[in-house]
Amino acid sequence: MIRNLKLSDNIAKGCTKVVTTTYTKSPLAVKSSKKTLPPRPIYLTNFTMQSNLLSKKSLTSVTANQVRMIHTDFKVPDYTEYRRDSVKDPRSSSADSYKTRNGFTYMVLGTAATGAVFCAKAIVHKFVLSMAPAADVLALASVEVNLAEIPEGKNATIKWRGKPLFVRHRTAAEIQAEQSTSLAELRDPEDDSVRTQKPEWLVIIGVCTHLGCVPIANAGDWGGYYCPCHGSHYDAAGRIRKGPAPSNMEIPPYIFVDEKTLIVG
Image (cartoon, rainbow, N blue to C red; front, side, top):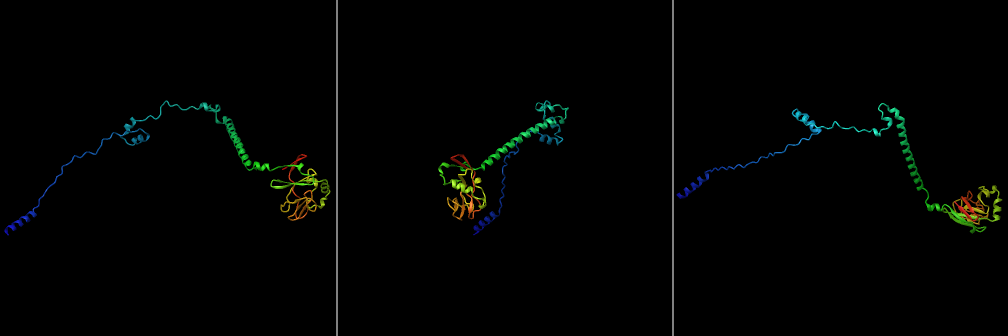
C-alpha cells in the first residue's frame, strides 16, 4: 500500500515537470541576387541626344559625343541638263517662256484627247455591232427567186423573213384588167404601175391587212386573192376591193437581177 502511494507521487511529479528545449537552425550561406550587367550602350540618335541635353550633368558628355549628320562636301543635285533652255537663265522671268511651255502642255493634252476619242469610238463601234443581227439572220434578210420556175398565170408562195411572199406571173388579160381599173372604184387608190416594176410580175407580202391572215391566190370575186377568214377580196394587183381589210397588201423592196432572177429584200 505504501509502495503504491510512492509510485503515484513519482508519476504526478514527473507529469508536472516541464522540460524546456531550444532548437537553433544553423544559418545557411545566402547568395547575393545582384548580377553584374555590362553597361548599356548609348546609341547616338536624335532622341537620346535630346534626352541627354535635358540634364546639366550630361552636357559635357553630349557635346563630346555629337554626331556629324552631313558632310561639308555634300553636292547638291544639278538638274540643268533636264531643264529647258528658255528657263536656264536665272535673269529671265517665267513669263518669257510661258508661251513655249503652254504650247507643250496643249500638245500633250491634245494628243491624250485624240487617243481617248479613238478609244471611245472603237468601244462604241463594238457595242453597236454587238446589237446588230447575227450572220444567220442577215442571210435570211434577202431571198432569191428563180422566175423561170413560175409559169404564166400562176402564183408562187415563198417564205421571207417569217412571212409568206407572193410572186405572181400575170397574164396579158390580168395586166389589161388591172391597168384599166378606175381609181375611184378602189378603197385604197393606187395605180397598177406604182405597184409593179414589170407589168407581168407582181411581188407582194401575202398577209391580209385586216387581221394578218394568209389569203388564197387565184380566188375571190376579182380573181386575185381571197381571205376566207373574214371575206376580204383583192384583185390581181393586191388591191383591196371588198371586205373588212382597210388597205392594199404590202409591197416589199425587190430588184430584178436579170430576166430570170429576182431578189427580194
